[in-house]
Length: 147
Ligand SMILES: CC(C)(COP(=O)(O)OP(=O)(O)OC[C@H]1O[C@@H](n2cnc3c(N)ncnc32)[C@H](O)[C@@H]1OP(=O)(O)O)[C@@H](O)C(=O)NCCC(=O)NCCS
Image 1 (cartoon, rainbow, N blue to C red):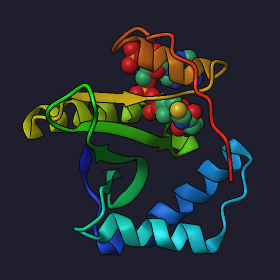
Image 2: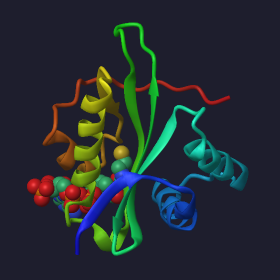
Image 3: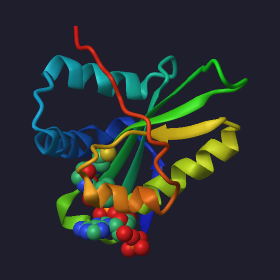
C-alpha cells in the first residue's frame, strides 16, 4: 500500500475538507466556512503563497501539510512556513507525518528556499517527538494578538 506525497489538486477538496474538520476539532477552534472556502481557493490559486501537499494512499487523502513561503529580513530568498500538519487518526504511526516532512525538506532544497520552520504546542508530545528527530527547537516563544 504505497504512499504518495503530492501537490493538491481541485479533486482533493472533499478529502482535504474531511481531514481539515478533524484538524480543527483537534485544536478545538472554530474556523468558519468562509475561511475554509477561502483557504481552499488560495491553495488552488497560483497567485497565493499558500500551498498544500497531500499524502495519498489507495486514492484516499490520509494527511496534509499546509504551508506558505514568504520573504524575510535575514535571508535573500524565501522561507517556507509549515502552518498545519495533520494525519488521519486511523493512519498515525505509519510514517505519514514523516513522509510529509521529508517531502517539505526535499521541496525546500529543490526551490532553494532558505529555511523551513514551524511551531507546535509545547505540550504536543507526539508531534514534538517527530520534530525533534529533524532539528532541535530554537527556543523561541510565539506572541500573537488577535484582532
Ligand atoms: C503529529 C502527527 C502529524 C504525526 O503523524 P504520524 O503519521 O503519526 O507520524 P509518523 O508515523 O511519521 O511518526 C513519526 C515519528 O513520530 C513519533 N510518533 C508518532 N506517533 C507517535 C505516538 N503515538 N507516540 C509517540 N511517538 C509517536 C515517533 O517518534 C515516530 O518516529 P519513527 O518514524 O522513528 O517511528 C500526527 O500524530 C497528527 O496528525 N497529530 C494530530 C495533529 C497534530 O498534532 N499536528 C501537528 C501540529 S503542530
